Structure formats: structure tokens, C-alpha cells
Image 1 (cartoon, rainbow, N blue to C red):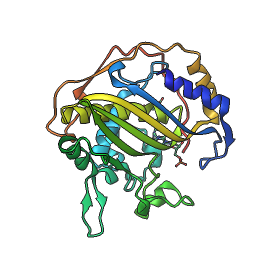
Image 2: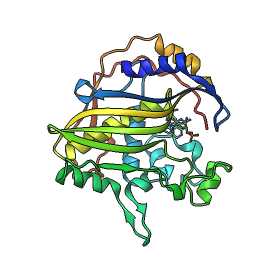
Image 3: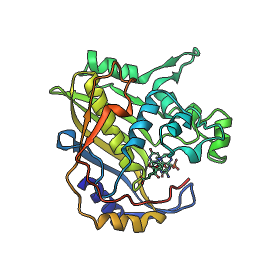
Length: 277
Ligand SMILES: Nc1nc(=O)c2c([nH]1)NC[C@@H]1CN(c3ccc(C(=O)N[C@@H](CCC(=O)O)C(=O)O)cc3)CN21
Ligand SMILES: O=c1ccn([C@H]2C[C@H](O)[C@@H](COP(=O)(O)O)O2)c(=O)[nH]1
């Protein structure tokens, strides 16, 4: 993932100091993009160890339409705990909008079903996308995530918000727009998650995985991640691992963490960093 290391360098070199909602302070650039061909391996960083279980289980949780941390916690994932209420609720974020976008008549639209059906029946369509930015449910920035949830709003507005798919020559490619990207902690997760989702959709729709393209808006490094970034840049990248899917589940909603096997992952050790809340 040289592209990722190049982005870290780019932010260090060209970033401007910006304040932010969390009060931490960032170095930030606007509008960046990198791409990765999935035939070249699974895009999991090798310059620090990543917890693939958190990444895959978070994706499965989104696809379940679940917005409570209980299932994540039962499955060893704690990355959403800081934003949840005492009962684990996060409000109608990602999973809710992906699978049950509310409609005027009190019903809902499953955007993931639409993507799967369109990939199968009309792969040339230029409308194969889903997104999470449902303005009616965005949080009020002047109150806490927990107060927003109590008011029926999302704890946090979506960061990875627009997923578009493209089929050519039997290959499925995907582009993700991330409006705000915590480049040290969040982006490695978002990149690997996009790759897993693309592989799952390709399998369900009898396509081969193609390229993933990640486009970031406010691309920032938090001021308390700088020594970690330097440590990461001092490390030599290693060969990318391969991710295998061991069976073909009945639908996009039936994947389990045990269905995936990561081969040849030999990363440098994890680098811990505080998450800005
Ligand atoms: N500031 C911030 N950055 C994010 O990336 C982020 C948010 N907030 N809020 C919502 C979600 C939660 N996400 C997170 C939260 C924590 C880690 C994190 O601390 N990762 C550690 C390992 C932690 C673990 O596996 O339990 C890492 O080293 O990658 C990653 C993504 C992504 N999102
Ligand atoms: O999937 C995710 C979720 C969140 N982030 C980061 C991006 C920002 O650092 C914060 C969100 O704060 P805002 O003030 O709402 O932009 O979380 C991410 O990188 N990836």
C-alpha cells in the first residue's frame, strides 16, 4: 500500500493546520484519491498490524442493518463504543440507511438489495450506488452523540458515504467517497472494508473483483498521531496478503467472519494511537 504511505507524506508536506470538532487539531489536505487493483493482493496495511476481525465484523454489522454495539461487542469489536449510549445505541447511522432508508409512506428502501439486483440484471447501469447521507437524521453538532441518539438522530454523520460500483469485462470495481478521513486510524479500515465489500458483491454476482478507488475529502492527520505516523513511515512495506472467501453464502447478508481466510499476512507490529471523540 505505497499509495497510503504517499498520502501520509503528502499530508505532512502540504497539510495546513486546522482546528476540528474534537478539539484535537489536525494537519489537513482536501481532495485526494488512490486506487488498488484487487488482483495485486488484499489491501491491508503491512506497515502496522490491523485487526481484520474488527473490519469484517463491522461490515457484516452494517449489512445486518444493526446500529447497536451489543453484537459488535459480542464479536470482539469495540471501535464504536465511545459514541454509543449506555444501551449501546448509535441512532440511525450506516446500517440503517444502507438497508432501511425511510420513505415518505412509512416504508423503507434497501439500497443494498438494489445494488445486488442491478449488478446482476443491469451491470452497465451508471446508477449502481448507495449512500448514507440522510440529511433528516444528521446529528446536531452542538450536542453530544448520546443526546443526538436520544433525539432519534445519528451519533455521528457518515464519513464513508457514497459507494459506487462499475462493471466492465466481467470485473467489479468500486469507488468510495469519504468526506472526512482520519488518515492514520480510519482510512486503513475504510480501505480494507471497501475491498471486502467488493469481493463479497463480486462473489454474489458472479463477477471478478476489479479495482477499488478511495476518494477522500478532508484528509487529515490528528496532531496526536504524528509520532505514530513517523514510525509507520520508517517501516518498509511487505508483500500484501491474500483474502480468501471459503464458501458462497446464500446472500450478501449471510457472510460470517469465519468465511474469510487471510493468507500471508506478515505485518510490522500494531502502532496504538488515541481516537479523537
Ligand atoms: N476520530 C475518529 N476516527 C475514526 O476513524 C472513526 C471515528 N472517529 N468514529 C467512528 C468510527 C470508529 N472507527 C474507528 C475507531 C477506532 C479505531 C482504532 O482505534 N483502531 C485501532 C485498533 C482498535 C481495535 O481493533 O480494537 C488500530 O490500531 O487500528 C479504528 C476505527 C472509525 N471511525
Ligand atoms: O469510517 C470512518 C469514520 C470516521 N472517520 C473519522 C473522520 C473524522 O476524523 C471523524 C469524524 O469527525 P467529523 O467531525 O464528523 O468529520 O471520524 C473516519 O476516518 N472513518
